[in-house]
Length: 343
Image (cartoon, rainbow, N blue to C red; front, side, top):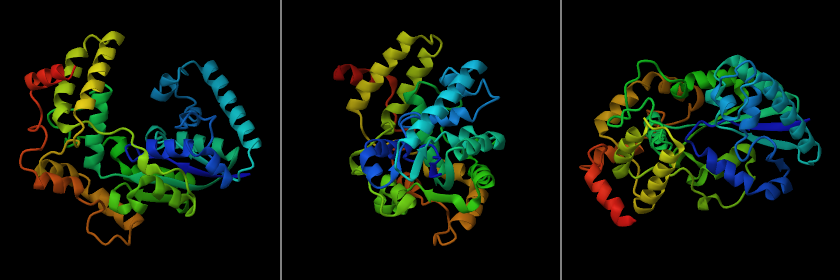
């Protein structure tokens, strides 16, 4: 039986960089005894996650992969397992690395997570489950930037992307996520890290990930890899306004037009992502104080600072006079003429 190492995210913690580095290092990994599969989705192993969603035909992942029909899903399940089995059988590697940041948030039902574990155990023994946590305010503004890129602003206020939640969304309930993983895979298997530069080996997520796997494991130089860069704070709001204006049309032509504009303005504006006022960040983080205190005591008992997360982004807000969002945003006229000059 193979040893299986799971990387389960969370979202916006460098998962794409990790996956791309592993994908580009396939042969180097194999030389060190590690297999990064190609049969489970590339580079994110979302196909295996989909296989755990039996009984959930309308789940977004099954919809995304056109697996709503149960017969189609059963065929997909059989095909995925068969291909993975053949890939393992043809490999001399003893350890398999599986990575999908959707696991922790889309398999929030313990039954679905147990389905996932059962499928994995058909092929090997799960030894480690690696997960990174990001400060909730940084996570939220990163999600907002991504939502603007994808032209899907459901659940976001473009003037205040740091709300006080009436009910904590599952992806922000770190305690529940870790409890779910612990209950299914065992707490001893968890390797929990903080996604912030000072907490990562060499200040690099890929190096830190490799250290958590095996210490001496090496892949390509990950410093050259950068994915999912946040939008320049000055242009997020006018782009979000454009999204709202185009939303009623919901045509592929309109979306392609938006994508063209997005790509062009990203070439012209590559400044830092948004930071709100220090008061906004403090108020948003206050709702996580209790949870973060428990997580610090449970998973990071040797952490010397008082808070679980450092205050890098909040320090930027405190030190900023005029560059906080939404005040730093271009107005629509300025954005329009700046864009027109770049064409």
